[in-house]
Image (cartoon, rainbow, N blue to C red; front, side, top):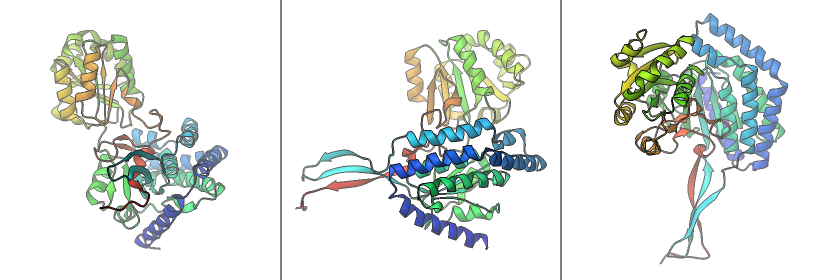
Length: 418
């Protein structure tokens, strides 16, 4: 079957499944989620074997360390997928919830009801756990979904897809509610993002190139973020122990994630106290530092930062460091060079913290916490479909509510307009 014909068939089946899944009860959806969790747990060996094959192919293809890290399906990540499914099952079902009910002068009652988006297409690279995260959230929010993972994870994704199908079958729900594309042909992506008759929204997860391409070519709505240029600002009123721990964790916990700190900003008043200590810590983790002139005075081993470094998502053990005059300078730098993803301030000054929350234009803004917490699982969403830095419909980690829309509902009792 040609790719165009294959994708059209996938789209037709997804649209048909979306009209069935919208009628599913919360109990039925939860049964499918928990049955999928059990299937993953029972098929650990098969999942691992499929992933080993993908990792071997990835090394042969010359994938870099960050990509291989994202691709790896470790026992801990399988545990996390299972726990994510259970968390999503435990979350309140947003579908059908009616709120904001009020009487208007005519006597009718007007409110809003949460409804699914319909069919969600998700294009992603490397991380096979996204298959479970996306499927679980779409299922709980009564959306059908079409999942197109990267060719480097094809065996892992197909193994996970079998577990999802088992879960859907256990709950007597249509298997077409979650479809994992079986072809690695890149033309499948082009078809998926240009089928508005079958797909209601596209969520791209991957590198900047992928997301830019989809944003440019898609004929359906896109929920996305392009970069994860995250900042930590150490204020002159910071607790130094907290500042050091957070700054080290935000950079070194994992390098290949969009919520990893890429630029560290330090107030001039405390730079001499904190930067040499951080330099030693980063050296232990073999992190390359690229700094402004003042940073290099305090850390002789740092190399000179260029203008491009202030807006670079390294996804690697490299960190840009800049000494700023204070709060105003830090906020200006973040809003100018950041990607509106996640930014944090370390301070014990409540007024400054509130200012930072108000004035930093990002989808997640944090006080005295590592940027690594910007994640649907950590936010209690169970999982996330992706992170949005857009300002319309959804922003930040997109969970169940972000996968629904609202429609107006009206209650009357024979009312007619006069």
